[in-house]
Each structure stands twice: as C-alpha cells, then as structure tokens.
Length: 190
Image (tube, rainbow, N blue to C red; front, side, top):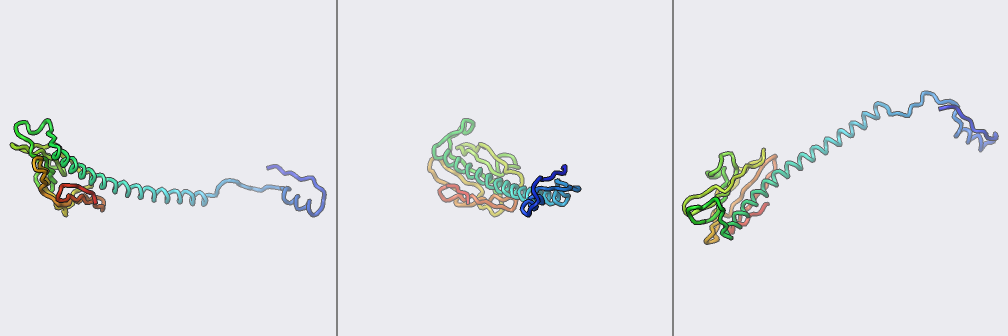
C-alpha cells in the first residue's frame, strides 16, 4: 500500500480522524493465512469427514441387513399369494397337479438349488417338487443359527400352512433382524 495523508485542520476531532485514516507506513503486513490456521482448518475438515464416513458406513450396513430381511418376507408373501390363488408356474408341474409352494431355509433343511444359496422357493407338485428359484444373501449377511424355520409349506387345496409359527433371524455386521411367520403363514419383519 502506498502512504496517504488526510488533509484536515489540526484540531482534536481531526487528530483522531488523522489517526484513523492516516497510514504512515505499512511494514510486512501479510493478509494471508498462517500455517497453524490452515492446519486447524484441515484437521477439522478431516474430523468431520471421518465422522460422516463412519455414519454412512453404519447406515449402509444396517440397510443391507434390513433389505435382506425384507427380501425373505417378500418370498413368504409371494408363496402364500401363489398358493391361495393356485397360480401354476409354466415350467413346473408338467405331469402332475399343483399341491402348493414351500420355502426352504438351506441352513436348516436340504435345498434343491445350489448349496451356496440361503433360501429357496419350491413348487410342490403331486409327482415331484420343482425348484422355482433360490437366492443368496448379501456378503457378510447370514441366517442366524437361532432361526427356528426350516421348511414352511403353503398348500393350495386346503389353504393350510405347515411349519409355522417360526422365526428367521438375519444377522450381519452385529445387526439382527427377525422375520416372524405366524400360524397362518403371514410374514412380518420385527
């Protein structure tokens, strides 16, 4: 900055104004940031980012377990609906009549599908059971050993449900979600 002077008469009020507006000399005046100020700002930014990442990671893990439980509930709802409406899949029961649908928890009973799958839905026919589809759980998510369901059958002719009431416990990342199947075959996530 260059030196400048205010041109005012010499009185007490004007002397104060001279002090306020008169800059005699500016020496090494820096208007940047000091290294310590920058370090404090970057440390705070790192801390806030770290907290945000941990919160997002925890939320994501909880949603993974909850979504796996909702998927299993949907399988039960689908099997019950198909049995009540006597929906016959086009690829199943080619030689026999439709008896119903069953859900098998592969860790508790033997499945028709691959051994790596967690659960499956089968079409029960008068001659043979047929695999409709099977599904794996997301990585790091399992069906807990405390689950009491192994096979739940929905019969089309009698609307009778075998295997309930029981629970399926989905666990992962230290989080558990329970799917409760009541005596009528209705599934709910607890």
